[in-house]
Image (cartoon, rainbow, N blue to C red):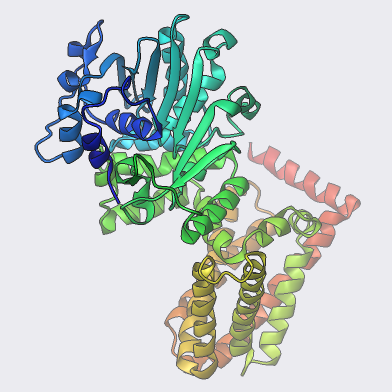
Length: 537
């Protein structure tokens, strides 16, 4: 297949009057928008394209072909605007190409390699960006009544083209004859009025590579959507310079890559389950961590060493964004099940009452004290069996929905096979069972201890709940450390001690839940807390 550079070379002597503007020209011009332009040379008057690009064409066959081309090199450009600000997280650029005397092509730059540019992309998921505001300002400034305009952009630039067109006046929009969104995200429904898309729906052409991730985020339904092939692989197909040309047109594919569709499905579910505030908190943590380490580009930010990874993990935990991140593997393994449980009647009951937690702890504790020999093995096997069974059912469900297309669902099948293999290993190898089980059990006990410790720190009154959490944090901390470090021959008596502890903890939680549920005792309890608090003040 041929490249964009080949296309430019083939039609090098044909102006836009000789051969009319087409979809490949759109990709060429949007790709050129990523290059550096000399704003002073462009000035207030249109300037030939070859005279105002400052990049070297020595090792760039695409740029060399453009500069040698009559079709593109002689193309007049004007109204070049570039804004870059770390303070406002703005990476914006736009310019206008003069295709014909009365038809202009407006191209918005997509995300460059700067960390600011990438941060702005993520900001789009929770608030209106400065770049989007400037896209509207730019169109209001340059659109004239005696010209017609094609608006376009690649990646973030495609989003800016959509956003700008949606928010200009009817009079300005009447001068727009077409819009190209080259694999750019749509408008975030929690941030923008997506009903404005109706104003431009019939004008839009959307072009995606076969492996499409970015262009599917907040995607809208348009009539003219095309899937094209790329010389790159995987996520790198997003780069428009890699899109292939055949007989003067973009080479189209029949369908999206199955692996990218699986990622799209997970991303959509994650976005739906994460609020704009949660997205904002996570974005700020990730990028502030990279910035604190001196990263100024996306490439530098991705070069995390051990310290960098540790900093990121600590900042995510301290910012209370761990739950937001944890929803990603949750979606991979369980789909929408956990989200439905969280919003169902059972979740509301559990949140409102400690009774269920108390019953679970009591039952598990009693089982551990009665069946000390096999309790540990039984609990771990049951937990793994539940995960394996669910994953099997969920995988079969997805395969049926996809008409048993194993190629499209291969990633999901791989996940099930890995989990099933681990389950088989712990069934037949006691050593593996003990290692996996002690790690899971110990980690869970440490989490319980830490949550109890946080409850102690946040408590202002030294009541029953306060002292219960003090004791609970100390005991569960000791149990967690012991089960992780202890040899396997101590499991029997450890389970006896832990079972007794959990049973006591569960019974106290049940009693406390009834006190909370009873209006009479609850009022007395809260009045006592208020008196203690008043005395301390």
